[in-house]
Amino acid sequence: MARTKVFDPAAALDAAVRVFWEQGYEATSTDDLVRAMGIGRQSMYDTFGDKKQLYLAALTRYTDTGGAALQHRLGAGQSPLGALEAFLREIAGADAALRARGCLSVNAIAEFGQADADVRALVERSQRVTEDIFADVLARARRAGELAPGLDPASAAHFVHTAIRGMRISAKAGAGAAQLGATVDFVMAALKARAAPVAEV
Image 1 (cartoon, rainbow, N blue to C red):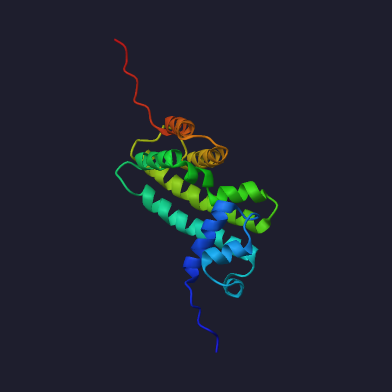
Image 2 (image 1 turned 135 degrees about the vertical axis):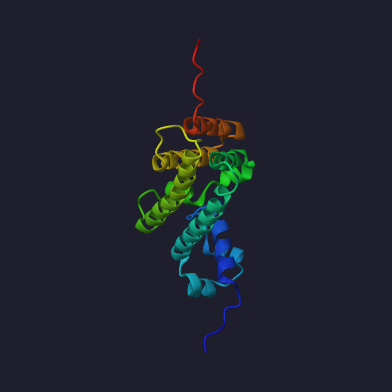
């Protein structure tokens, strides 16, 4: 009879996500992973495969849990654009250690580029999930009269996501909260509807 697993695979995978997120793929050893996951090597291999397969599973987990959390976060509150701005301000104002960790998906782009087809496919999936969520909140902002006239929610979503990726990389390079906050100012200025000018008499 097969032995029953004595660990929680989801919790172990979450631990692997944290290790890869903090250290990157190349700098992470199998010993780092099994120590953080609290399991033996054979259990890791039996459940997740080798280090590369575990990394791909971690990227998938990161996208799925992060996407669900983002959708919930941006669905809260009466103002769609206000919810988006609060999210961006949170990224900019995070403590230095959290800013330096960046985003696992963005880190994967920086580390692998286009060289690995499996990683590229998961990064592209992450981009679609994230931008679909942004497009939805921006469409709601347009219906609420908050979005600048003429802005297409899908194009604006790509703009916002690109800005966030830039903020993540800048933060890893040492940009502080004030610099990142200025980027948020520009993003919001581009998105927000302006009040109509008062006609002169």
